[in-house]
Length: 330
Image (tube, rainbow, N blue to C red; front, side):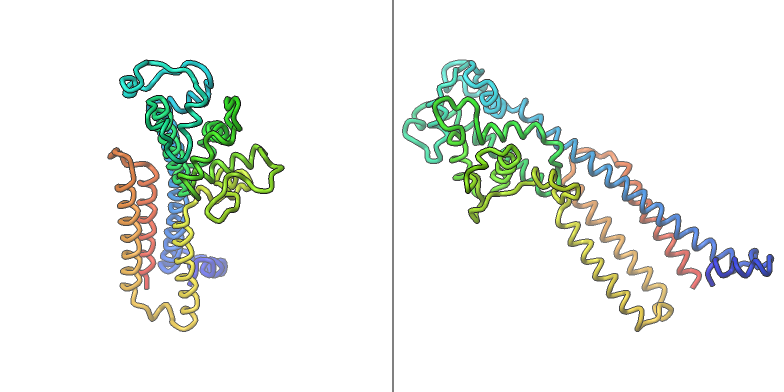
């Protein structure tokens, strides 16, 4: 009998409120409420910790632009244009100098999709080619992480300037801005996350919007759309939500619906309590082992146990104790 019914009875008979049956039902209800509250808190902590992890990962990745000499060289050339630029230390012996000025022909030729004879024999052009290949690969990795939900578009706003310059370099001088880097990107990274990032910035800035087709296309020939755009078009962007979460939720939705249908055919009282407990323990064990194994495989080298992890585990323990309390009364 539920506590609500017992409470109504107690209005007629005050002593019924002190009966062991009423107290037991109240304890079970309170235990379930506490377990649900603990689960909600654990989920909130987990979401906040995941967002902090996204920010930290994005910051560490952005730091590479200043710590990696080739990346810094490529980005600085985009920014400084014709100014004298320091040569990366491990290339100085090859180039024969510690700094170089911009020769637009060198950079343009270095960025041709097919390696030209002039570039093959010119150390400066080889430096440009290596530096921008490094930058393109770095941006592609960022795009992959963004699409997987490991980082969020809002944390990569400084990258938009770099992407915009790659699509339309302001120091192109006598060349078409879009002809400097885009041909190589489209040839080397067709249909990649890098192409989608560049297409997103092009769409956002409205460049060349009078042309019927974008110069940045995927494998299908249609303009690519990036998480940069998706996250700004809708507050419910899916760019920071991996598909795995959707599959996981959908699978359990199907299981719960099957259980709902089965409840009309099988009485819950006919199911042995021990099998209910075993099923729950198997589920919890699978969640903890899978989640923990993934964190060990992909997490950084730090043995500190996060507060969100502690809350998550405590929430599962509380739910298990609530289930034990309910089953023990059957």
